Length: 340
Image (tube, rainbow, N blue to C red; front, top):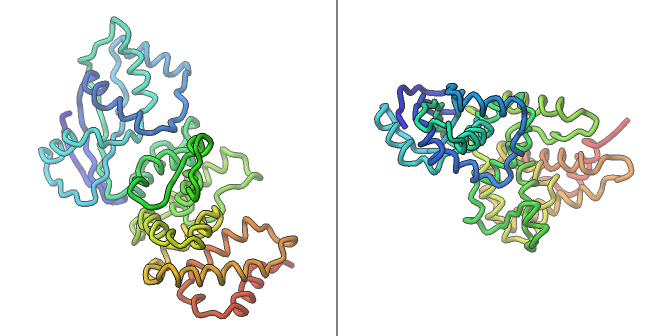
Protein backbone atom coordinates (compact mmCIF):
# COMPACT_ATOMS: atom_id res chain seq x y z
CA UNK A 1 0.00 0.00 0.00
CA UNK A 2 1.43 3.35 -1.07
CA UNK A 3 0.85 6.47 1.09
CA UNK A 4 0.74 9.81 -0.73
CA UNK A 5 0.32 12.34 2.06
CA UNK A 6 -0.38 12.66 5.78
CA UNK A 7 -1.94 15.28 8.05
CA UNK A 8 -2.89 15.68 11.72
CA UNK A 9 -6.48 15.27 12.93
CA UNK A 10 -6.58 17.40 16.07
CA UNK A 11 -10.02 16.19 17.15
CA UNK A 12 -9.00 12.55 17.57
CA UNK A 13 -5.32 13.30 18.24
CA UNK A 14 -4.37 11.19 15.28
CA UNK A 15 -2.68 11.17 11.91
CA UNK A 16 -4.53 10.64 8.64
CA UNK A 17 -3.19 9.67 5.26
CA UNK A 18 -4.31 9.02 1.70
CA UNK A 19 -3.25 5.66 0.29
CA UNK A 20 -3.48 3.65 -2.90
CA UNK A 21 -3.25 -0.03 -3.64
CA UNK A 22 -5.00 -2.45 -6.00
CA UNK A 23 -7.92 -4.84 -5.78
CA UNK A 24 -5.60 -7.84 -5.44
CA UNK A 25 -3.93 -6.48 -2.27
CA UNK A 26 -7.29 -5.28 -0.94
CA UNK A 27 -8.88 -8.71 -1.23
CA UNK A 28 -5.81 -10.44 0.18
CA UNK A 29 -5.03 -8.12 3.11
CA UNK A 30 -8.02 -5.84 3.78
CA UNK A 31 -11.07 -7.98 3.08
CA UNK A 32 -10.24 -10.53 5.86
CA UNK A 33 -10.47 -7.72 8.42
CA UNK A 34 -14.27 -7.71 8.16
CA UNK A 35 -14.27 -11.13 9.83
CA UNK A 36 -12.74 -9.62 12.98
CA UNK A 37 -16.17 -8.33 13.96
CA UNK A 38 -18.40 -11.31 14.79
CA UNK A 39 -21.62 -9.32 14.89
CA UNK A 40 -21.41 -7.56 11.55
CA UNK A 41 -24.51 -5.91 10.20
CA UNK A 42 -26.19 -8.00 7.55
CA UNK A 43 -24.72 -7.46 4.12
CA UNK A 44 -27.12 -5.35 2.13
CA UNK A 45 -28.36 -6.87 -1.10
CA UNK A 46 -29.64 -3.62 -2.56
CA UNK A 47 -29.85 -2.23 -6.07
CA UNK A 48 -27.00 0.14 -5.22
CA UNK A 49 -24.56 -2.67 -4.43
CA UNK A 50 -25.70 -4.76 -7.37
CA UNK A 51 -25.05 -1.77 -9.57
CA UNK A 52 -21.67 -1.20 -7.89
CA UNK A 53 -20.73 -4.82 -8.59
CA UNK A 54 -21.58 -4.30 -12.24
CA UNK A 55 -19.63 -1.04 -12.35
CA UNK A 56 -16.57 -2.68 -10.77
CA UNK A 57 -16.56 -5.22 -13.56
CA UNK A 58 -16.79 -2.36 -16.05
CA UNK A 59 -13.74 -0.69 -14.49
CA UNK A 60 -15.20 1.98 -12.19
CA UNK A 61 -13.06 3.60 -9.51
CA UNK A 62 -14.27 2.37 -6.12
CA UNK A 63 -15.12 5.19 -3.67
CA UNK A 64 -12.37 5.42 -1.01
CA UNK A 65 -12.59 3.14 2.01
CA UNK A 66 -11.43 4.04 5.52
CA UNK A 67 -8.95 1.90 7.43
CA UNK A 68 -7.95 2.72 11.02
CA UNK A 69 -5.35 1.74 13.58
CA UNK A 70 -4.86 2.43 17.29
CA UNK A 71 -1.44 3.48 18.51
CA UNK A 72 -1.09 5.40 21.75
CA UNK A 73 2.64 5.92 21.26
CA UNK A 74 2.78 6.79 17.59
CA UNK A 75 5.57 9.10 16.51
CA UNK A 76 5.09 8.93 12.76
CA UNK A 77 6.54 12.11 11.30
CA UNK A 78 7.14 11.20 7.66
CA UNK A 79 5.43 9.53 4.74
CA UNK A 80 7.91 6.67 4.71
CA UNK A 81 7.43 5.92 8.42
CA UNK A 82 3.65 6.13 8.09
CA UNK A 83 3.72 3.82 5.07
CA UNK A 84 6.00 1.33 6.83
CA UNK A 85 3.74 1.27 9.90
CA UNK A 86 0.55 0.67 7.88
CA UNK A 87 2.00 -2.14 5.80
CA UNK A 88 3.60 -3.89 8.79
CA UNK A 89 0.44 -3.67 10.90
CA UNK A 90 -2.24 -4.16 8.26
CA UNK A 91 -3.67 -7.22 10.04
CA UNK A 92 -4.38 -5.04 13.09
CA UNK A 93 -6.46 -2.53 11.16
CA UNK A 94 -10.18 -1.81 11.51
CA UNK A 95 -12.53 -1.03 8.65
CA UNK A 96 -14.34 2.12 9.70
CA UNK A 97 -16.09 2.71 6.42
CA UNK A 98 -16.52 0.41 3.43
CA UNK A 99 -17.59 -3.04 4.66
CA UNK A 100 -20.41 -3.27 2.12
CA UNK A 101 -18.14 -2.11 -0.70
CA UNK A 102 -15.54 -4.73 0.24
CA UNK A 103 -18.20 -7.44 0.22
CA UNK A 104 -19.36 -6.23 -3.20
CA UNK A 105 -15.76 -6.23 -4.41
CA UNK A 106 -15.36 -9.82 -3.21
CA UNK A 107 -18.44 -10.90 -5.16
CA UNK A 108 -17.20 -9.11 -8.27
CA UNK A 109 -13.80 -10.81 -7.97
CA UNK A 110 -15.46 -14.17 -8.55
CA UNK A 111 -16.47 -13.15 -12.08
CA UNK A 112 -14.13 -13.95 -15.00
CA UNK A 113 -14.04 -10.35 -16.27
CA UNK A 114 -12.77 -8.97 -12.93
CA UNK A 115 -9.55 -6.91 -13.12
CA UNK A 116 -7.57 -7.53 -9.92
CA UNK A 117 -4.97 -4.88 -10.79
CA UNK A 118 -7.44 -1.98 -10.74
CA UNK A 119 -6.37 0.78 -8.32
CA UNK A 120 -8.33 1.59 -5.17
CA UNK A 121 -7.90 4.40 -2.64
CA UNK A 122 -8.02 4.41 1.16
CA UNK A 123 -8.26 6.97 3.90
CA UNK A 124 -5.93 5.81 6.68
CA UNK A 125 -6.38 6.90 10.29
CA UNK A 126 -4.07 6.24 13.22
CA UNK A 127 -5.96 7.27 16.36
CA UNK A 128 -4.64 7.74 19.87
CA UNK A 129 -7.19 5.51 21.59
CA UNK A 130 -10.32 3.43 21.16
CA UNK A 131 -12.76 6.15 22.23
CA UNK A 132 -11.51 8.56 19.60
CA UNK A 133 -11.51 5.86 16.94
CA UNK A 134 -15.14 5.10 17.70
CA UNK A 135 -15.95 8.81 17.61
CA UNK A 136 -14.59 8.95 14.07
CA UNK A 137 -16.55 5.84 13.11
CA UNK A 138 -19.78 7.45 14.31
CA UNK A 139 -19.12 10.52 12.17
CA UNK A 140 -18.38 8.36 9.13
CA UNK A 141 -21.47 6.19 9.44
CA UNK A 142 -23.97 8.84 10.56
CA UNK A 143 -26.99 8.63 8.30
CA UNK A 144 -26.47 5.06 7.16
CA UNK A 145 -29.52 3.03 8.03
CA UNK A 146 -27.63 -0.25 7.77
CA UNK A 147 -25.68 0.35 10.96
CA UNK A 148 -27.08 2.19 13.97
CA UNK A 149 -24.86 3.95 16.54
CA UNK A 150 -25.77 1.26 19.09
CA UNK A 151 -24.68 -1.48 16.69
CA UNK A 152 -21.42 0.28 15.85
CA UNK A 153 -20.60 0.61 19.52
CA UNK A 154 -21.52 -2.97 20.36
CA UNK A 155 -19.40 -4.56 17.63
CA UNK A 156 -16.43 -2.30 18.36
CA UNK A 157 -16.77 -2.93 22.11
CA UNK A 158 -16.31 -6.60 21.30
CA UNK A 159 -13.38 -5.99 18.98
CA UNK A 160 -11.47 -3.11 20.57
CA UNK A 161 -11.34 -4.34 24.17
CA UNK A 162 -9.36 -7.47 24.97
CA UNK A 163 -11.47 -8.98 27.74
CA UNK A 164 -9.41 -12.19 27.65
CA UNK A 165 -6.69 -10.47 29.70
CA UNK A 166 -9.11 -9.54 32.46
CA UNK A 167 -10.41 -11.47 35.45
CA UNK A 168 -14.03 -10.66 34.54
CA UNK A 169 -15.77 -12.69 31.87
CA UNK A 170 -17.71 -10.99 29.09
CA UNK A 171 -20.08 -12.98 26.89
CA UNK A 172 -22.15 -12.13 23.85
CA UNK A 173 -25.83 -12.96 23.82
CA UNK A 174 -25.12 -16.00 21.65
CA UNK A 175 -22.40 -17.22 24.00
CA UNK A 176 -24.64 -16.80 27.04
CA UNK A 177 -27.40 -18.76 25.33
CA UNK A 178 -25.03 -21.54 24.33
CA UNK A 179 -22.88 -21.85 27.47
CA UNK A 180 -23.47 -19.20 30.15
CA UNK A 181 -20.61 -18.54 32.55
CA UNK A 182 -21.40 -17.76 36.16
CA UNK A 183 -20.84 -14.10 37.09
CA UNK A 184 -20.14 -13.12 33.47
CA UNK A 185 -20.96 -9.68 32.09
CA UNK A 186 -23.16 -9.25 29.05
CA UNK A 187 -21.38 -7.64 26.10
CA UNK A 188 -24.59 -5.74 25.41
CA UNK A 189 -24.51 -4.24 28.92
CA UNK A 190 -20.85 -3.24 28.52
CA UNK A 191 -21.78 -1.58 25.21
CA UNK A 192 -24.59 0.35 26.92
CA UNK A 193 -22.03 1.60 29.42
CA UNK A 194 -19.74 2.61 26.58
CA UNK A 195 -22.61 4.49 24.94
CA UNK A 196 -23.24 6.30 28.24
CA UNK A 197 -19.52 7.08 28.55
CA UNK A 198 -19.38 8.52 25.03
CA UNK A 199 -22.57 10.55 25.34
CA UNK A 200 -22.13 11.56 29.01
CA UNK A 201 -25.79 10.65 29.36
CA UNK A 202 -27.51 7.82 31.25
CA UNK A 203 -30.77 7.96 29.29
CA UNK A 204 -29.93 6.70 25.81
CA UNK A 205 -32.99 4.51 25.37
CA UNK A 206 -36.51 5.85 25.04
CA UNK A 207 -39.37 3.76 23.70
CA UNK A 208 -41.44 6.92 23.25
CA UNK A 209 -39.07 8.19 20.55
CA UNK A 210 -38.92 6.42 17.18
CA UNK A 211 -35.67 4.54 16.65
CA UNK A 212 -34.41 6.65 13.74
CA UNK A 213 -34.90 9.88 15.68
CA UNK A 214 -33.26 8.37 18.77
CA UNK A 215 -30.25 7.40 16.65
CA UNK A 216 -29.94 11.02 15.53
CA UNK A 217 -30.05 12.14 19.16
CA UNK A 218 -27.33 9.64 20.13
CA UNK A 219 -25.06 10.74 17.31
CA UNK A 220 -25.56 14.36 18.35
CA UNK A 221 -24.66 13.55 21.96
CA UNK A 222 -21.50 11.73 20.91
CA UNK A 223 -20.41 14.54 18.61
CA UNK A 224 -21.09 17.11 21.35
CA UNK A 225 -18.75 15.26 23.70
CA UNK A 226 -15.44 17.12 23.47
CA UNK A 227 -12.92 14.28 23.45
CA UNK A 228 -10.04 16.61 24.14
CA UNK A 229 -11.51 17.23 27.61
CA UNK A 230 -11.50 13.52 28.48
CA UNK A 231 -8.74 12.70 30.95
CA UNK A 232 -9.54 8.99 30.91
CA UNK A 233 -10.61 6.31 28.47
CA UNK A 234 -13.40 3.77 28.79
CA UNK A 235 -10.67 1.16 29.09
CA UNK A 236 -9.67 2.74 32.41
CA UNK A 237 -13.20 2.19 33.68
CA UNK A 238 -13.13 -1.45 32.55
CA UNK A 239 -9.86 -1.96 34.43
CA UNK A 240 -11.40 -0.38 37.53
CA UNK A 241 -14.38 -2.75 37.32
CA UNK A 242 -12.06 -5.71 36.76
CA UNK A 243 -9.90 -4.81 39.76
CA UNK A 244 -12.86 -4.51 42.13
CA UNK A 245 -14.84 -7.46 40.80
CA UNK A 246 -12.86 -9.78 43.05
CA UNK A 247 -15.28 -8.45 45.66
CA UNK A 248 -18.55 -10.30 45.09
CA UNK A 249 -20.77 -7.44 46.28
CA UNK A 250 -19.02 -4.97 43.95
CA UNK A 251 -19.23 -7.48 41.10
CA UNK A 252 -22.98 -7.90 41.56
CA UNK A 253 -23.42 -4.14 41.73
CA UNK A 254 -21.47 -3.61 38.49
CA UNK A 255 -23.48 -6.35 36.76
CA UNK A 256 -26.73 -4.48 37.33
CA UNK A 257 -26.82 -2.72 33.98
CA UNK A 258 -28.38 0.52 35.27
CA UNK A 259 -25.65 0.78 37.90
CA UNK A 260 -23.01 0.20 35.24
CA UNK A 261 -24.52 2.90 33.02
CA UNK A 262 -24.48 5.39 35.89
CA UNK A 263 -20.92 4.40 36.76
CA UNK A 264 -19.87 4.91 33.13
CA UNK A 265 -21.04 8.53 33.17
CA UNK A 266 -19.99 9.48 36.69
CA UNK A 267 -16.58 7.80 36.62
CA UNK A 268 -14.79 10.52 34.61
CA UNK A 269 -15.53 13.09 37.31
CA UNK A 270 -14.35 11.02 40.28
CA UNK A 271 -11.89 8.41 39.03
CA UNK A 272 -9.02 9.87 41.08
CA UNK A 273 -10.99 9.30 44.28
CA UNK A 274 -12.28 5.90 43.20
CA UNK A 275 -8.81 4.65 42.33
CA UNK A 276 -7.78 5.31 45.93
CA UNK A 277 -10.49 3.00 47.32
CA UNK A 278 -9.78 -0.57 48.22
CA UNK A 279 -12.44 -3.07 47.17
CA UNK A 280 -13.65 -3.18 50.76
CA UNK A 281 -13.98 0.60 50.93
CA UNK A 282 -15.84 0.62 47.62
CA UNK A 283 -18.16 -2.11 48.89
CA UNK A 284 -18.93 0.00 51.96
CA UNK A 285 -19.93 2.94 49.75
CA UNK A 286 -22.03 0.80 47.41
CA UNK A 287 -23.80 -0.75 50.40
CA UNK A 288 -24.70 2.76 51.51
CA UNK A 289 -26.04 3.51 48.02
CA UNK A 290 -28.20 0.38 48.04
CA UNK A 291 -29.62 1.09 51.49
CA UNK A 292 -30.65 4.58 50.38
CA UNK A 293 -32.10 3.23 47.17
CA UNK A 294 -34.25 0.82 49.19
CA UNK A 295 -35.54 3.85 51.06
CA UNK A 296 -37.35 5.03 47.88
CA UNK A 297 -40.98 4.14 47.18
CA UNK A 298 -41.00 1.90 44.07
CA UNK A 299 -44.65 2.64 43.36
CA UNK A 300 -43.94 6.33 42.82
CA UNK A 301 -40.80 6.32 40.68
CA UNK A 302 -39.35 4.62 37.62
CA UNK A 303 -36.81 2.39 39.33
CA UNK A 304 -34.64 1.78 36.27
CA UNK A 305 -34.44 5.46 35.35
CA UNK A 306 -33.65 6.60 38.86
CA UNK A 307 -31.13 3.82 39.46
CA UNK A 308 -29.22 5.08 36.43
CA UNK A 309 -29.49 8.70 37.51
CA UNK A 310 -28.76 8.14 41.18
CA UNK A 311 -25.80 5.81 40.52
CA UNK A 312 -24.38 8.50 38.22
CA UNK A 313 -24.98 11.17 40.86
CA UNK A 314 -23.47 9.01 43.62
CA UNK A 315 -20.37 7.98 41.64
CA UNK A 316 -19.87 11.41 40.11
CA UNK A 317 -19.84 13.03 43.55
CA UNK A 318 -18.34 10.20 45.57
CA UNK A 319 -15.81 12.60 47.06
CA UNK A 320 -18.72 14.34 48.81
CA UNK A 321 -20.98 11.36 49.49
CA UNK A 322 -18.30 9.06 50.94
CA UNK A 323 -18.50 11.05 54.19
CA UNK A 324 -22.31 11.28 54.27
CA UNK A 325 -24.18 9.28 56.87
CA UNK A 326 -26.86 6.83 55.79
CA UNK A 327 -29.61 9.19 56.95
CA UNK A 328 -28.05 12.11 55.06
CA UNK A 329 -27.86 10.07 51.87
CA UNK A 330 -31.45 8.90 52.35
CA UNK A 331 -32.58 12.53 52.48
CA UNK A 332 -30.53 13.42 49.40
CA UNK A 333 -32.01 10.54 47.38
CA UNK A 334 -35.50 11.45 48.55
CA UNK A 335 -35.04 15.06 47.40
CA UNK A 336 -33.59 14.00 44.04
CA UNK A 337 -36.55 11.72 43.32
CA UNK A 338 -39.28 13.90 44.76
CA UNK A 339 -42.26 14.47 42.45
CA UNK A 340 -44.97 17.08 42.67
